[in-house]
Image 1 (cartoon, one colour):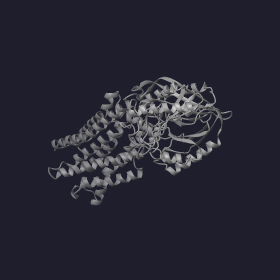
Image 2 (cartoon, one colour):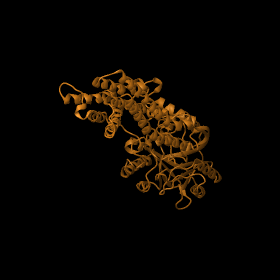
Image 3 (cartoon, one colour):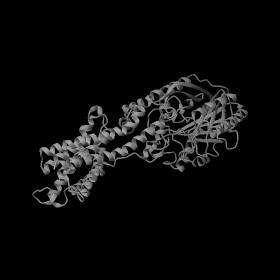
Image 4 (cartoon, helix red, strand yellow):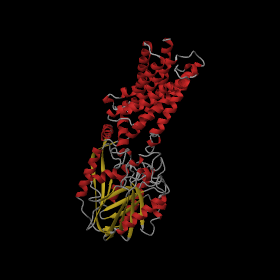
Length: 601
């Protein structure tokens, strides 16, 4: 079953440095020479004895693997997505490992059956290198530029030339080498076809073809790679009407402080679609130049992942238009209140609007269905509020726990808690002006801190005799157990506070897991960040008037119900078929080669 929190970074392969791979190629080439030419009588006869013969055998493998890596890196620069020297050497290192296995199999087989001729075995071994390189390079290089086949042939052709130079050439040997290349090509294409088939059958686009633009986007943020991936997501998306809510605080001097809560999930990953949502909306609305913008998470799931930057532009345009026509309402407010002890929902009246803040902490808390947010807005209207801004604090992470589906017992509890909190917020609303202060701390990074571009933002609202701090980290959830000590560090400075995260999926682009807030930046550092930023926000307090509004954005392409499940299921099927076809095709290639060598004796 698909788990939206499972990290692809857990299975990502990071190539070692060029030096490490180069040293491994040197060592593996020596091992291959020993396997191929032992015992000593198999060594090529050279003046100077066995030492020179060993160097010749070593060169037979080192030149195709080492020089082949250098040539492949240079030649691939003509493709739109080339292979760096580091990756090319890593490919040679892994190819050498496969070849070691082939020669070991030949040596073991020679113990129980007549040994196949050395020349033929070497030709077959280098053909296996072609098979392996083609499988790896085909998804990486731009096939429209017709580079893949040529670059994949560099190593085996150098190996063939070395074999003929050491052991002598013949027409039969050349024909055998050609036949082996055809076998390897057919075997590699079989593997690629099998890996492509599940995605192609489900979505009309094979997974191998998507790997190239995906890597181009994730490793180099290439515009073409992003556009290709987003076109794919658009082609499989459905249209939904999404809601944008804005709570804006206007002061006599200075920029507006704006809380923008779109019912958009900040995914699917990397910078595709609505991923990195806070930074994209800030850039589109010219923050921080013209306003200070906070983008907390509003109830939504991966079904509300916007498919492309173009589609996200619809949300951005609607947000800008709504913001331009907002007008301040009456000066009245309530404290941030809960309808009962342990309520998952707290409410604060601000002008004609109400802010609904949701968290299940200290229990696990995660995505809340978009439909529940719509029902909460309806409840707010029945309670007498003109607008409702609904926030999912997203601040107590336990993997695979805390989601609130529509129609679930937790969903009904959420609605009941909201009704009680709305009733109490209405009762405690008072006439009178309010003050607002804002501060932001940047300089974080996903790799070091688990925090994205918007950093830490603190908005303090002083209203109805109470100071409330909304503390927003641009991160994907908060480790369970950290919320309470973070809030404790703020006691004495404000009356109420909450720690929120944006659910920004761009922070996933690191090694080793989900990169939940608190994994990389420790609690003491987070507490210090929070205390420092809160002090700045308190010093910024000044009278303000509040305006709020919501707008419906029609026909936005999102991944929609079940699409993420279908993608992940198809990818799982692709991996399964690849895992089966990869060793099967290698075995078939080796058996076919052995039959040819036996017949050609």
